[in-house]
Amino acid sequence: MSSRTWGASVWWGGLVALIGLALGVWATGDLLQRRAEPRPLTVDEAASLLQSGEDLDYVRLVDLDVRCGGQRALGKLAYAEGRGTGWKQEVLVELDLDRACEDIARAATGAVRAPTPMMRKYLTPADDEHVMVLQPLEPVGWLLAVGLGLLGLGGWAVRSGLQPTPSLNLPRPGARKLDAPGPAPDLGDPYRSTEGDQPLLTRPLRASNRWRRRQLGRSGLVLLFAVLSIVGSTAWAISFGTDAARRHRVWDHGVLGSHVEVTGEQRSRGFVFRTTALDVHYTDANGDRHDAKVDYMSLSTGLDRSSDPVVRYDPADHDSIAISWAMDDDRGRLWLALLGSGTLLVFGLGAFAFNIRRLRTLAGIREIVRSEAKEVLLTVIGTTRQVARGDHIATVYTLELPGGRRLETTCAHDRPPFFLDVAQTRVLGLRHPTRKELVVALECDLGPLEVDGDESHRVRSRHKANLERERQRQQQ
Image (cartoon, rainbow, N blue to C red; front, side, top):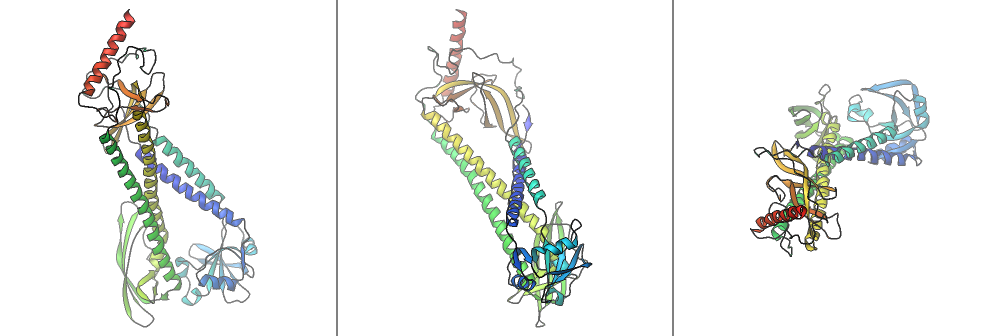
C-alpha cells in the first residue's frame, strides 16, 4: 500500500479555477463593453453625475483640454492637468509609461472617478471638492489570457486530484507472507452463470434499510456542509460589500472632521493576516468631540502612518466614520474577502458536486439490487490508502472484472469489501443483468444487502465448494 492525500489538490485546484473564471468573466465583460461607443459628456456634466453617486466607467469628455507640458506627481503616479470649457472643474488625467500624454488627451476616454484616499493626502480640502480623475482604459487582453491559464491549471489540478494512482497490493502490516494469487479459474461465462455452479448469495436479494439510512445520512451531512459553505460565502461577500459601500459613501459625501487623534494597534495573525483596532477621536463642524472605533482584518503589510489621519463622518451618525489610514488599506480588505468567500464557495460547490455524484452512485446500487443481479468475482490488483493528519481513514481498491475491465471503490478503514479468501485478493460483487457498466462491490457485512448473521460464512463456504468442483472438473 502507499499513502496519499489528494484532497488539498482538489480544493486548491478548484479555488485557482474559480479565480481564473472570475478574471476571464470580468475581462470578457470589459471587452464587450468597449465595443460600444463611450458616453459623451462635458466635464461639468461628468462632475455633476459623479457627485450624485453615478458610476462613470466608460465616458468621453468632449470638452477636455489637457496641458501635457507639465505633469503633477501625486504619490507614485503622474497626472496631467486639464479643464473643461467652464473651467470650474479640474481633471487629473492619469498617465503611464507606455502611452504618450498627447494620445491620452486626444482620446479623453476612460473611467471618471473621485480622488482616491491616497491622492487626497496631497490635495487641500478646497481643491478636493473641484477635482476628479480620468483613468484611461487599460488593455485587458492579457488579463483574459491569465484567467484562461488559471482556469486550465485549476482544472488540471482537480482532475489530477480526483484520479488517485493505484499502487501494488502488498501485505498488510502483521499479515503472514502469501504467494501471489494465481489467475482466476475459467468458468465459461465470466459472470459465474455456468450450469451446475451453486450461487453464492441466497435469493431473492433484498436491499438493507439500515445501509440505505446510513448512506443517506452521510449524504445529508455533505449537503448540509455544502449549503452552509455557500451561505457563508454569500454572507461574507454581502457583508463586505455593504460595509465597503458605507465607507466610501461616508468618505465621498461625509463632513470633514478636525483635531483628529487616533490610538490603537495592528497585530499580525499568521504570515499575512492582520487585525486592526483603532480608537478615533475627532471634532465635528459644531465643535463637539466624538469617539468612534474602527475594527477590521485584512491582507496587508500594515498601516501607512507617515501622513496625518483624515476623518470624514456622517452627520446623521457620528459613529459612522471613514479614516484615511483604513481607506488606504481597502485593497487588503478586498483580497481577504475574495480569499475567504471564494474558498468557502469552492468548498461548497465541490461538496455539492460530490454529493450529486454520490447520490447517483447510490441510485445505481439500488437499481442493481432490485434487478436480477448476477454475481461477479473481482480481483484486487491495487490499493491506495487515504490519510488525513497521519490517520488512515479510507482505502481505494482497484478491482478487475473478468475480461479486463477495471473499477475503483472507496471503503472506510473499518469497513473493507467482502473478501472471499484469506489473502484478500478476491471480492464478491453484483452486476446489473443488462447494464454491464453497473457493478457494485459488496461490503464486509454484505451491504447493501439485507442478510442474517450467518450469511457471510455460507457465502464463503459455497465459494470454496465451487472452486473444488471446478478443480475436479478440470482434472477429469
